[in-house]
Image (cartoon, rainbow, N blue to C red):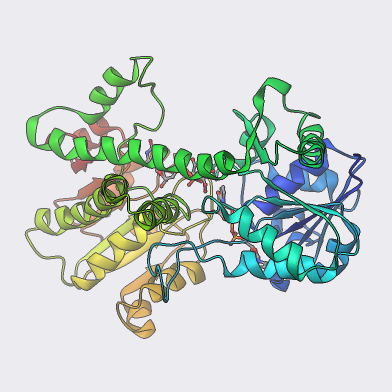
Length: 466
Ligand code: NAD
Ligand code: UGA
């Protein structure tokens, strides 16, 4: 089966970059990314390719190459569905905020809307691909809707979860550890649909890195991968607290265990807590699924990863208050970083939001600098928590696009994102314009501890003996 037209519903952090690479590597296939968010589509189509809505190193170059040739961004969802032989669903699947499963289950409202729209519009057979991260067995629900609400055309449902990480999306997509494709391995039609997708990836991914499985294994592998990754961060963060009490250094411990090839060195960087739109959401989803099968021990085991992460964020903020002589009321605290990790403008579930919120509740005055996050986004993140009024957030939080001005006259600096540029600042200059004693709380342990101590800073780094 030769695919000529692809449609991707959802032009977000996954749909945009993923389709840009598929289009770049398959110039003979037309790829149309559609979204109901007009502003987002307009930004993807912005004449100046630097204004695309997602900041990812290397992405604007890929978009520049393919856009208008065989990569298109549009709000005309029906037209793109109708034309495509293959439809990716890459819409958001956040944690439910209402009703059954509130605060745990994935909200599949948008997924179902997509399925119903495809069913309504499609006039010929389609391959429908789950790109969003979904609870195991969602493909059965999708098939039920498509088969019953449709126009009598045939559907093949594939699961093709995405493993890219933000900030490295382009590298991850260009050289993935593996591509996972789940489908109906028991029928010829199922196998043909899987092969059609394999052929698209095989344009740049080695065959041995393209795994095909049954659809349930594929769906569950995505949740499992995120749970394992987050579990490693919570594990090292749990040890960081013990390091601070015992004189051990968490980086030395991580290095020592990471050299054991059975453990490996990645994802052992202790931090102020993991953020991002997915780790927490996907573990909560896994916990909910386990509970719904009555597997309480399994659910409790994974829930602990989240409990530990919440504890890490809270204890970082508490330590700031305790160290600043038990009060931050009226004190100016500079936040270096707001994004949930470096090299992205994404702030979803960023630890910085929770640390700032805690400190504002202690009546601190927060001044924020992040190289990529807008002022509007920072206020939106705080407003979303609903801890206080929007006016109060604007009164107590200031956003300045100059790191030196942010640190000026502050009592303390909290490093909350690991942006590389923080390392190369003129720290003597920063010290000279701060109130003394000049405290730095390095929630990412990226600063040169010896240099800062020599300048005179009182440095607190996560996982380092006090
Ligand atoms: P996102 O919120 O950035 O993008 C989703 C887009 O879908 C939005 O622009 C929204 O307007 C659009 N949308 C929703 N319903 C629609 C509809 N009915 N028709 C057209 N457009 C619609 O989300 P994201 O970060 O790209 O994540 C998408 C999925 O991919 C989620 O399931 C997530 O768990 C998964 N995922 C995300 C990442 C990541 O790094 N962000 C990585 C792997 C997997
Ligand atoms: C993560 C996974 O790494 C991707 O494989 C997956 O596709 C994606 O979730 C998803 O499903 O959304 P992402 O959240 O973009 O990617 O970024 P990560 O690099 O995993 O970082 C997540 C959080 O953990 C960040 O806040 C980061 O600072 C933190 N982290 C990561 C640590 O604190 N220590 C580490 O050693 C690694």
